Amino acid sequence: MVRRVLATGAIGTVALAMLLGPGAALAHAADDDTAPAPTLSATSVRAGTSFTVTPPQSCPSAYGQQGVLITYSDAEDTTYQLGLLMTDDNGNWGPATVRLPVTGPDGAGGWDPSSVTAGTGTVDVLCLSSEYVTAAAPATFSSLSGASSSPTRLVRTAPDDDGDSDDGDDADDGTTLTYAPAALTSAGRAARISAKPALAQPGDSLTVAPVDVCGAPATTARIQVSPVALADDDPGDSDDDGSGDGDTGDDSDDIDGLGAGADPSAVATTEVDVSNGTWGSTRLPLPDDAPLGDYGITVDCLDSSQEISSRYESAPLALGTLKAAAPVCSAKGATVRLTGTYPGTLATGTGDETELPSTLKLSGTGPWNVALNSALTDGALLRQKVACPEPDYELTVTKPSVTSKGLVRARICNTGDGTVTALLQVAGKNRKFATVERTSLNDGDCAWLDGGKVKRGGSASARVVLDPVGKGTADQEVATTFTVRRKG
Image (cartoon, rainbow, N blue to C red; front, side):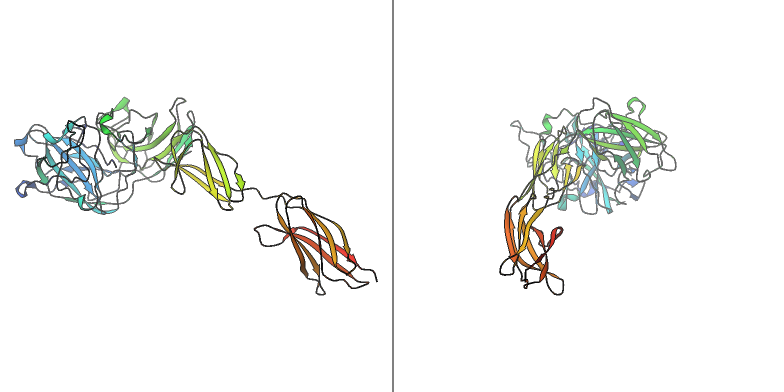
C-alpha cells in the first residue's frame, strides 16, 4: 500500500522516489555514522497537520548530493513515508515540512486509506547515497509492519535486464548517515468533512462542510475534487513522473494561484475563507463533462503564505448512477437486479464484489438491508431496505350449517394470493373459540371443514380464520364469524 507524503524545505521539493523490495527494511549506517535526532516543530500532532523536521547537522558532504528519507513509525509499528528530498551538493537540507498521512487521493491517482494509529511513534531520517535515489521513478513506497517497522536496511531493487526485480543479495549499503529517532505522538485521526451526495452525476452540485476545525492556523480552505483509480500493478508502465505523493503534488507549486499542493487533475476547485479555524458550508458545482468513476474530496487549510498548514481526511465521491430494482421473490429468498452507469467495482455488505449490471442474491425471508460501497474508496453508494410484498390473504365461507350428527360445517375457499391453513373454530360454554379442524389450502382451493358439537335445538357460534404459512399464528384480520342452529 502506498504511504507517501512529499516534503518541502529550504532546498525545495524534490519529485523523486525510491524502490523498496518486498519486505525490505531501510539501511542502517555504522555506529559512527549516526547523528543526533532531528528537531521537530511539535511533539504531538494530529494526522494531516504539518510540522517541520530540522536536522542537527547536514548529510556527509563527502558524498555530494544525497537523498533524505523521512519516515514515521506509529504505535502499532507501521511505517509511513513522510518525505523524500534531495540535499544540495554539500549535503545540506531542511527544514522539511511534512504531515502524517490521511485517507484520500494519493499523488499517483490512487486512493490511500492511511490510518495512522494514535499514540507515540518515532520520526526516522536517513541520508542516502544518490546512487540509490532514482529520478522520475513511480511511487512505490509501502507501509512496513512488524519487525520491519524500524528502518534498518535499504535494499535496491532496480529491474534486471530480464525484467525481474533484484533480490537485493548484491546490493550495497546505501546509507550515508542515520539520525537518531525523534519521538512524535500521533494525536488521532485527521479532521473530517461532510460531503453530500456521496453518489452524484456530472453537472450536479456538492455540499461540503467541516465537521472539525482546521488542524492548524489558516486563512483559507481549498476544496478540490480529484479523480482516483486502482493502482497500476506494474509501476513500470505508469506515466506518472514520480512527482505525485500523498499530498497530491508538489507543495511548492502554486497552480493558477490556488496555493501549494493544488492538484492539477482536479475536476473542481474552490477556496473559502477561514475564520476562527473553521469555514462555512460550501456548494461546489461539478462540470458537465466530468468522467464517471471514483473521486476524493480533499480540503486543505492554507496559511497566509498559501502553504498547507493542515489537511482534512478526504471524503469519497462516486459519479454515475446505481439503481436496485424491485425484488423477484421466491420461497428461498429474492434476487435484486442492479443497474446504472457507475463504472467501478461494488463491494457488498458480505464482502463480495460485483460490477454493473449484476444480480444480487438474497437468502431467507427478509426484509434485507442492501448496502453497496465503492470497492476502491469504501464510499457508501446505496443503502436500501428490500422486502418481498406480503401476499393478499383472503377467504370465502359459504353454506355454514350443522350436519345430521350435530357437527358445525362450512365450505371455505382460499381466494387470496398465498398458501394458507384454514382453521374452523367453535365457541364453547366459556365463549372462547377452540380449533376443531384445519386444512391447508393453496390459492384457489376450496374444502369442507366440520367439527365441534351442537345439541338438538341448540346453537353455536363459529368462525374461520387463516394461519398464513410461516407465521404460526392465526390472522384475526382475515376471519369470518357465523352462527348455526340445529333443529330439535
